[in-house]
Image (cartoon, rainbow, N blue to C red; front, side, top):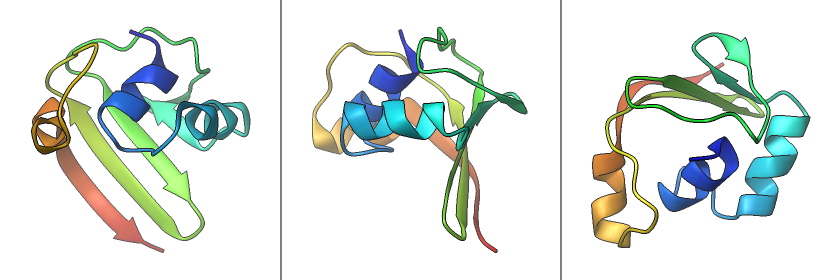
Length: 84
C-alpha cells in the first residue's frame, strides 16, 4: 500500500492530499529515511511524522485497504510521541 494512503487509512493524517504534501515537503520518514508518497509500506516499517514541534513515530502492525475509526489504532503501535 502507498505511504500516503496508509497514513490516511490509519488516520495518522486526516486527508490523503495532506499526507501527500507532507511527503513532498520531507516531513515523513520511513526507517530513518525521507520517503515519497509512493513508498510501498510493509509490516514492521517505522514511520515518523513531523509537524511543527511534534514528532510521532509508529511501527506498522497491519495493512488494510479500509478500516473503521475504532479499528484504525490497531494498524500501528506508537513508539514515541515527542514535543520538541
